[in-house]
Image (cartoon, rainbow, N blue to C red; front, side):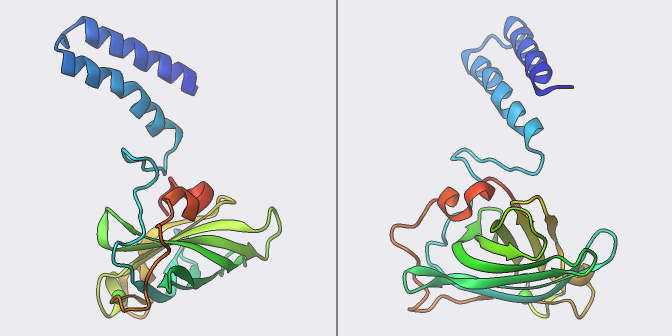
Length: 215
Ligand SMILES: [Ca+2]
């Protein structure tokens, strides 16, 4: 079904609701709002859009930094090894990313860290955004958004995910499927040097084309 067809059906359904039981003004306003919300949901499957736009990430008000290293298993069981660090440093961002996909041979190395964000979904989540080169041609550089989740030590409950602007996507998942020896994500306490840019850039500025996307 095309998006246009879907939207037409939603409009028709909304009109039926307005003519029917939803006669209260607030309910009518809610029904009218259903059309654009539903349109967003069907057109961008991996996107989470909040009321202010974007995925809801902001530079942590008291900024800090995160380090990580280890591997996750793709859905088929092959390893993707990673090292990902990021944070605020002297009113700027700091960090580095490299990953190797042992199934495809893809290698990704960061060029620039453009953002460091926490997520409304959990205080243990940090996203790192930036640009990177890959060893597989195509449009270079790519934009990346990495998700790190620190759920304690050792890192059996920690998680990693990555999204690239070329479509490569490892959904956020437990290191080594939650088994021992998959590495660790470590969120560090703020210190006097972990100050971010002033003013804090928007999620769109930090994450470019991936500003609405969740790894
Ligand atoms: Ca950890």
